[in-house]
Length: 160
Ligand code: 4NP
Image (cartoon, rainbow, N blue to C red; front, side, top):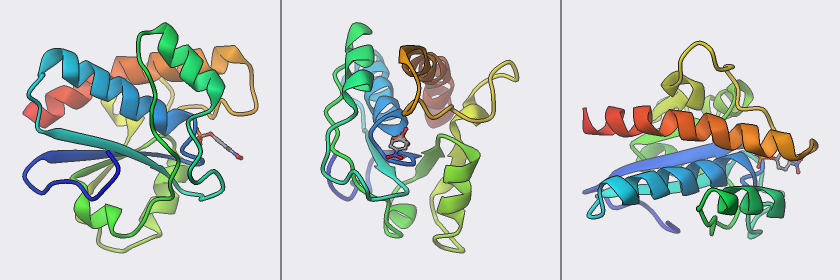
């Protein structure tokens, strides 16, 4: 999704720091799950970063290749989150508590519901999706494991 979401559909924005690793994976994996479950879906999914440093870039090649190994192609281009996003999306899912705090500082009264990805997971998972950018391949796999585990609960929360 590359524009303002349609007001007639439910819209979800994943947010991380750079919008090249964790949030593109959230966007791609949730879209993949929804396409499989509900082909005529009315759910719009996008992602953004709290910094604009990587604006216009595709997702990190390590994340693209890890996602592709699980059958998911990541096609997003990095963009920085805007205040308008917090008034046009229904649900914003931050990857870690720092991302969430940065989003909360942007506007005092967002109309979007603000959540952490870990709000959709059990207590055996950590509160933050660890930033894989400076680490090895395991970090990318762990991010995908966390997002895959959260997807059913995100989908349930939309249909509830
Ligand atoms: P992301 O990972 O927030 O999951 O996209 C990062 C990407 C880039 C940087 C940090 C984290 N960076 O410092 O450039």
